Image (cartoon, rainbow, N blue to C red; front, side):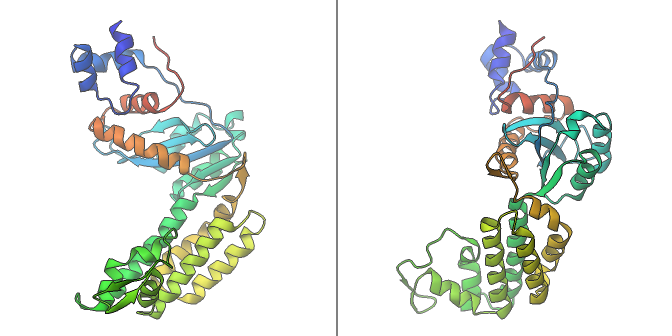
Length: 322
């Protein structure tokens, strides 16, 4: 049956409507019609642990946003639903139909990046849930701030200077936590000496006292992020915030403000759920698949078709064929 064959082919997120048409010997418009008419995927029920994230999706017929908002099931690693916009107004409209239901009252945790409308919506419609800031996004914001400082310092030096060379060519040492710093040293012609990674890092940090201070603060936060528990996270985070404030590094001001505004949500993220720390890793993993699907299919401009295509190709659950 051609309908079943088309639907089976389109289970792959790498498959385009055009390629499905070629494989089945029918027109692309017929493939699209079959998919629209026979794929009916309702949203999934909101579970106890929900992740919220967004995926860049330009060229949509929905003009309010270039991002789709995706809700994920933290435990099952599946998509709950895909919305054409992440704006506060659209999210209000979506959740008003579910307001006060047992489904939303049963949500215990909501994990998100620091997109403030997500927090507002979760507080309004999932009143019993603990809001958790995704640690990946917090760390990314920290690294971005350190990177800005590195660039500002680097631009003070001539491009042929040792300082510029270190800050440009060895910048990965500022951010990597998996590199063996005590490797065997090699002769570095630019530096005129034998040096291993730790010595190169030390040379780089000695260029500017703010860089040295900023790097050690970053390392302190990373240790906290990896080793803190829900029980001691509040005290440790308070100490870190004070340390960032006292450091008085302009490039860290925005990050420090974020820590203050999202303090409780960062603390909440250290809670465990079924033996796992609450984070958006499931979203980050599936987001790459969604992005690849949209790239392969050149975006899929139709909002409902795009939603069904994403959920159909990525979720492990079945579909309703009518």
